[in-house]
Image (cartoon, rainbow, N blue to C red):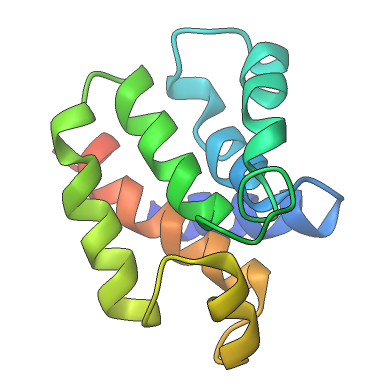
Amino acid sequence: MSEERKNKARSLHRQGCNCCQSVVMAYADKLPIEAKDAMNVAAPFGRGLAGTREVCGCVSGMAMVCGLTGHADQARTLIEQFRQENGDIVCGRLLASGKKPCPDLVADAAEFLHDIIIKP
């Protein structure tokens, strides 16, 4: 169920994972690498690429999960879906808009991934 993935992503973020880690780790059971390795790989992609507030960590996390699960061709579709839902894919602008807090953004990303990784 997508609600489980969304709740897991939110929970991971509240426990201190960055946005990218939260999205990636919500799908750790579907990845062909160890969870600790996935966590480490995702670490520098949080806070908009190493804290630069550029590309949102949620977007980077979706792309990572797509690549690791053989769905790289779906990454752009998910990125556009995220942009459509949230108005942007740049961390700084998303935060400045104040529309959604990060836990809700990671939940969106987890939900969008569900439709590609789990649902088919």
